[in-house]
Image 1: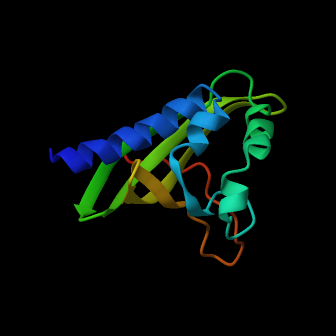
Image 2: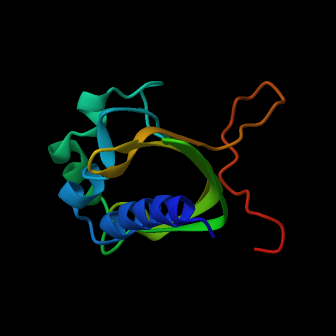
Length: 147
């Protein structure tokens, strides 16, 4: 594996580890100052101010009882110069304070740029499929074949 590909994978693992540990500062440290997000939660576009809002992330962590586990499946990383893109299916599990056990598969695409302080996430896009029958219902029960 190319050195840059491994460095990008390390950033993604750092982000997952920070979320699992509910460490908002460590999660935000993986983001570039100008990061934008197309996250699972509204609004459609999250600005760098929103993405880097430590208090908001800590509030979300507080809705979980124990760790929030996010594991990637079949991550692909492509690097071209100072830009990298990684995509995978991700599985988030944990126990919500109000709703109990949670299990959600979602699609994730992450764009990173090499900065003077290493690879940083400049764009994060996460989504779930929705029913194309006109209902607009998110298909949260989907999982990869064989999982």
